[in-house]
Image 1 (tube, chains in turn green, brown):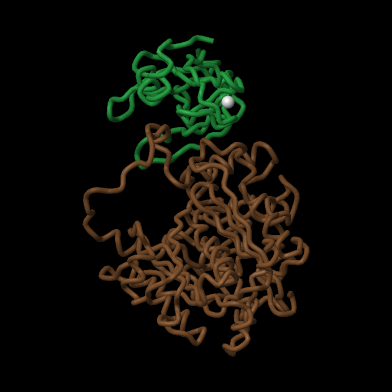
Image 2: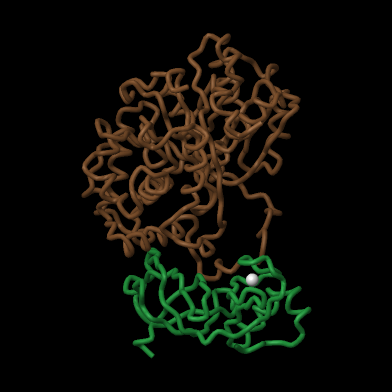
Length: 133
Length: 389
Ligand SMILES: [Zn+2]
């Protein structure tokens, strides 16, 4: 497990900032509770699993499996996928799978992280099928 | 006092909708809430001056009961604007029962108003409430709330073999009930083939898997059971109620196929001393077709994963073994945005024997189940006639 920062107090009090900094650096950061060892996502100042407050940031390897997915239809544009991905580290993120038609994203599909920017130019984590890598 | 002391201690004695459907561009949510309140009180033989417990949510109002009290001229000694989503109104049944039983109020009014159709023609005011927390979903443009429920439906299909035909059966059953309800918004005939033929909006949902968007309000009035006998109406007793929530955003729902209705219903049935086998009619919040399947499973009317088969073959439609959403539900009757009050109104009408063509014969026990957020807050009430006490 990679500890992002040794400045644990600062990390703990501004988890959203640390998370966003990670995205800007091409990293999907999540938290690990040092009390119960569970992964925590989205970023918080306390552990929802055990109530502990000793959380540290780590960087996900970005390998995961599609938990569920929906293809959202748009007029005159291709559909896009809104997809829940279970990361190997034990947390789940709502994201999107790119590089294949939204209708072809399937539950159980192995996916790997990629990064792009949203319509407002903000960095975000997305996924692509392992098979397409 | 044990919570079981609430069983049958209070009763709903008046219900009413406001005007529903398209109420017109010049009308507002608080007006519909007030209209429904007056009508519900009249149904009970009471007036706003009798009300000392005020419960409600009015769309666009952050302190709903404070606005409503001023508007209606009510100075309540018990007030509750709990905003937990569309299930709020069934929660108010629960909270009002406790408050009445404890003497914290003597007449509780539960009210709702919302005008999404009317509002669509209005200019937007600035200074929206804004996000409650940093948002980890918006960047991916989920189409809320539909995509959250679509994700649950997709997972349910993957895990249990539920099909789009199963989902369509829910929409068709709701429409068949709506065809018997003169107040229902959508009453044209509908077949499974019609539902499946619609274009996908957020897979696996077509537009017919999604609830209506209508204007509307509703209200209910409760008093203690001893007073109910004096009002000259047929009381509907609150036998049990329970609530639960586990998540707010869909990404935090631990298992997309299991809602907190498992807990809310178990609590309600335990208070009532009844089981799903005792229920004659079910009114549940069908924001999307998957809701009906999941909630019937979660409340114990069938096993987890068997909901698709359970709703098929007309079982929940008129003439079926378990009448569900006998008003036509959010899918075909009305859906102003937070539908929970209508589960209570219809359950009361069924138990009073006032449901006309859609009346379930000899209905003695009804379930009203509310849902809020994205399968988030779940509240179940078990209601019954005097025979069920
Ligand atoms: Zn922990």
